[in-house]
Amino acid sequence: MRTSLSLGFLLAWSCGAAGASFAQEARVPPPAFADADRTARLARAFPEIDRLVTSFVDRARVPGAAVGVVVDGALVHVVTRGVQDLESAVPVTADSVFRIASMTKSFTAVAILQLRDAGRLSLEDPVEKYLPEMRGLAPATADAPVITIRHLLSHSEGLPEDNPWGDRQLARSDAWMGEAMRAGLPFSTVPGTAYEYSNYGFAMLGRIVQVVSGEPYDRYMRRAVLEPLGMTRSTFEATDVAVSVRAQGYRREGSAHAREDLLAHGSFGAMGGLWTSTQDLARYVAFQMSAWPPRDGAEHPVLRRSSLREMQQVTRHTPSVVRRQALDAPAVLGAGGYGYGLRVNDDCLVGTFIGHGGGLPGYGSLMRWLPEHGVGLIAMGNLTYTGWGGVFNEATVALQATGALAPRVVQPSPRLVEMRDAVTALVTGPWDEGLADRVAADNLWLDTPIAARRAQYASLAERHGACAGVSRFDVENALRGRWRVSCQRGWLEIGITLAPTMPARVQSLDVRGVMPPGPALEQAIGQVRALVDQWSDEAAAALFTADVDVARTKRLLLLAQLQAGGACVSGDTRVGDGTRALIEWRCARATLLADVVLDPAGSRVRAVNVLPDPQRPCVP
Image (cartoon, rainbow, N blue to C red; front, side, top):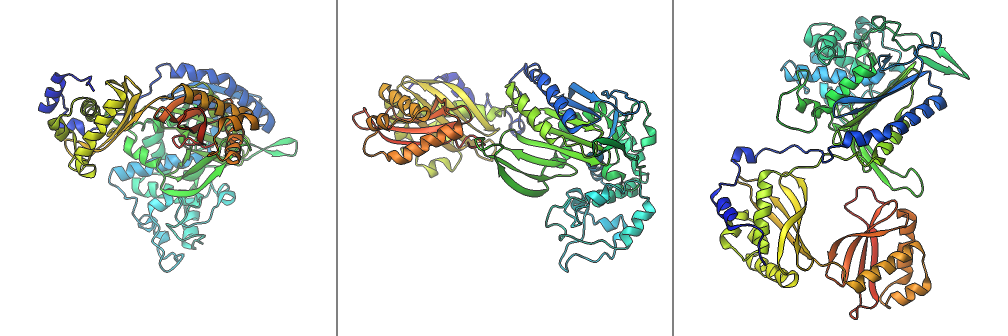
């Protein structure tokens, strides 16, 4: 084999001239979007999003609504429908102000983390340190831990779910709340053991903000959070909102709408009292999204990025589910939990999405963003518990259909690139003992003896011929990646993981040779694929040897038709030696893997298997 790397590179590398300093080597490069036109391409979904919003508002009979799309920190699209007030018939605009209910909770969490970062409290502090009314509270069990601020932030303080009750407590006074806490609290679970949504717990957090900061909660929030974010139309008191822009809340009563009374701001405002507009809420969602990706650079004056990311990590898990939206749709895993004032979910269709809903008498809202994709959605309506989840799900599908809803691409560290090129030289060129020593971490040649490695690479050289040129560099993280090297016959798949040392060297090395299917195997794969679209007993009998379990194979191919949608075309070869191939089948609804083996004569198929692609997060 010949190497594509020059001797000059190897000499420079061996002397350290091409290497980064240890300080630089320790840094993780931020991932980046590969598509420079992504915003314009995403915009192709906006007409469909407008249609979805219109259909929902008409169907659910929402008096007025506003929906926004945030991309890379900017509000790039707004759709408004209906009116702020049925009596005045003033249309909803991007400046209309709605009450966003429980979406307020993440604002309260921001305030708590501000005070934590300033050294004025700890998340492990007992709540009773700041709320003396909690002292002497009878525990849920004799071995129950004391309730901490972290428990309140993550809904794991053990109090019962209280949405129907909590919705009506916004205007309660501090004195009332103090008396209620002194009277005692019932537990539904033991603190620190389970998730259960508690408005009361976030009201306590608002009281803690007030005690620690020394100023009323709403005044602190305006000074430390809302004004620095430019949220000039946002407030906790309804009377601060001009009637000309305030959305009146309604509930359904039969075929009519009834006005809801406006609750004043009080001791429970920290759990759901904020009023805001589409423009302001977009600024807040952009602020939360600015935490991603982790990177160098100036911090936001409101809260540092690491603390924002901390809010957006699961602290208390909730049960996972697997569901199908239809009998012939892919099985989708949903997993996640609660961070600090935010819900965190992992969906195998889109990855991680973060957000929170809000529902109060008269209002319903939702914010959701995909941190790895830089895209967020916001919505507000003036109907009790306006449910936006379905609209957001369909809007996400519309954004996906543009092909531009893709996550940032992980970037390799400079050291990983150096090791990739050095390993390529070692594997494809004449064996270089010195290079082998410089590449390998101290475990590498112990795990697989160096003589066995040399023999493997010599065998690959005989089979594949000269190899050169790195392509398809798939980076898993800053210190792990796989790539392809093209050869005269087929190609090599090489993967490495670097060790946690300075300098980082290769602790794991995998090299595999792949040969594309020969003409006979290519034809056989096509014949098997045709059986997915239309099974034929006669065609199967002519194609398969007696080694094939025809009944099982028929069942597999029929399942491929049902689950993956048929209409499959061959894609990349994952494993192959010319007479056997593990090859991608890209079908209408899923990607499958077909493992097809020819008989020694190369005329018929002696083994076949079809299975879901393990590299795909959703299975058909």
